[in-house]
Length: 112
Length: 104
Image 1 (cartoon, rainbow over the protein chains, first blue to last red):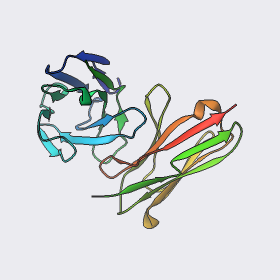
Image 2 (image 1 turned 30 degrees about the vertical axis):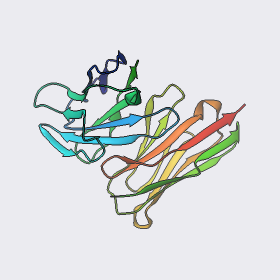
Image 3 (image 1 turned 90 degrees about the vertical axis):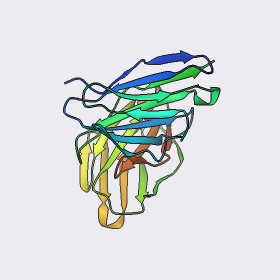
Image 4 (image 1 turned 120 degrees about the horizontal axis):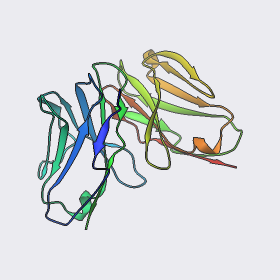
């Protein structure tokens, strides 16, 4: 049973480009969370998704950021027109309802 | 929303010492987990513990849900225990973490 898979592990984008981060949850997990982490800081909640539904996006910036978790395929976090301040590690976690959650290895985004 | 507070924010120990990390939360929860983020950034599951006590080797955890806190105990600490310890409650809302440094 593979764990939570995130790809790419490292992503470099120039300012103004789009970044797409992928998260494949563990088999049978229908809940996905995305977090952003700056160096030496904690995990900042961004969005909570279930299959085909956004449950809570209160932590996501209103502009340039979007997330989806389609019926088939991975969850996608999309950042449009990236800026230097978007450089961070982005983690996703998945779980079944009211059970233990597991994290992926993270995607480290660098905007140059 | 629910508030999660962890203490202490930083902790420095000599190898072999014991420690207790605390997680307070502001509302009733039916989910609580402890994670360790190692120096390479990987987030490792320690305990899923909505209530009661669990032990795994040198680590143990206790959650008293009615009093809204959880404790993580580390005994005979090792340098490999260094990193940041997070608790997460409810719908995976995190505290700010406790940064642990274990010196040889």
